[in-house]
Image (cartoon, rainbow, N blue to C red):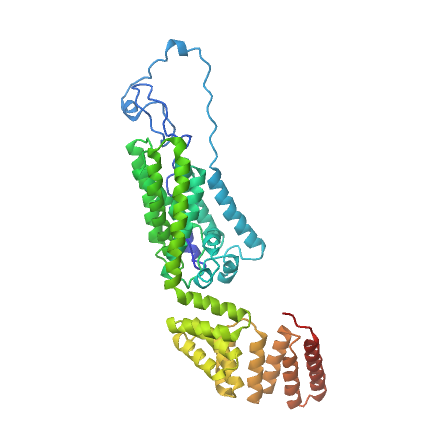
Length: 490
């Protein structure tokens, strides 16, 4: 069970699953949520526990331990009576439903083209993963959607195994609706603590909510008057506590959002504490009381969200800056991103984004300073290297531009504007064959780029290829006229 911020190590996760498989499965007889009472011992009349391990017995532990004890004979009037009907086991509807939702969403993600084993962080983010700059700046629904998303099949398999194991036990004790309430409330609690600790990570997974179920089980078992034998309670409690403790230790490894685990566990412990008190009431009063507990929990979580958003305002500024960049509102983006880097001056991503906004706004000197600062913090950033190289190329600092292009282009995704600016710098350096190769690559990636065709025409002219140059110049002019003739929309 884990909640990750990106793809974790497959070997570590497989080792983790092996540890989970060693956990002993708990078997218990069917019973209604309203009562945990079973028949009395046939030998001594003592009340039998509602949960047992292995096959249920009609005799208590004391009587079973006595060697040679035979069951007391049934009364004569019962000898000829027909067998009593046995109630069919009740399906754990809520547990099955939660599993089905998680699995269906993962199947839809894979069907959309996302990798079955190692989906990219950005892909999961688009599906609704938790990310402070987005969540805190208005996309509040990510607090819910993130608990149904997973980073690959191994991630979802481990979480669904744990949900099936703990969910059935919790549903047996507190009912289907309460289990769903625990899952949702503690899942949100998990996301809130994760955001308060580090809002700049992309996080997804059901494990925060699963830790919440474990926490609720701990306090319900410890404080609730369930009518169970003390030994049975101790065994159940021991399993759940060990489960939570071992998984928290495992979460100390990289790529795992352990603060979400802790947030789910703590919120589950608190909710379970109040749920445990409902067992003191009559069965018919419990649903309303539990509904009130979850309503109050929802209000508390909303109230907690407010200070988290205020204390992590820099994440909100980054979210607004990204949104403005996406809509080509560069001046607005600059304002928000300047606020962000003022609060997080050692974040290379913030400086790179601010540099991009300044460069798009034609403020090249300021943009260069931001890219340079970003590379001082983290030198091996292909995007920052190429952006600064393009800046240098435009400002005729050709030697510096070519040095950065050589470093960044080898590790960056193919990008038409980057190849265009690389060709521009190579042309200025007099390296015409290389310049022709790079600009043709730009045209291959974006055949409708009029500027690239015109640059190719310039390079071909310098190489003495006048006929080809004329053809490319004509293509560039035609594309430019076609683009200018297209109607604009608001």
